[in-house]
Amino acid sequence: MMDGIARFLAMGGYAAFVWPAYGLAVAVLAGLTAHSWWRYRQSAAALERLQRGRPKR
Image 1 (cartoon, one colour):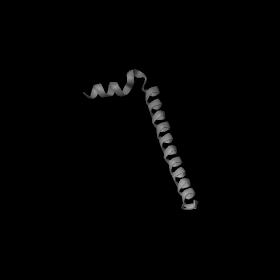
Image 2: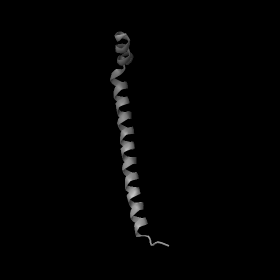
Image 3: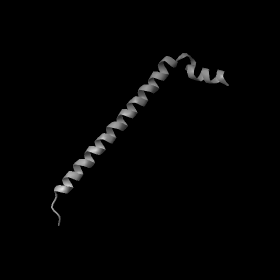
Image 4: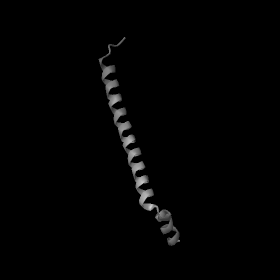
């Protein structure tokens, strides 16, 4: 069992290339998620400011 996990983690000798690529992909996706959340918060705040300044009918 442990030998199978170790073989998987070694990625057939390409672990030095595969795991950093996975790490980079996760970092980019996390950055995009954080940026999207940040922009959403900015847009929601701007919309709230605009709606507060609008006269009521």
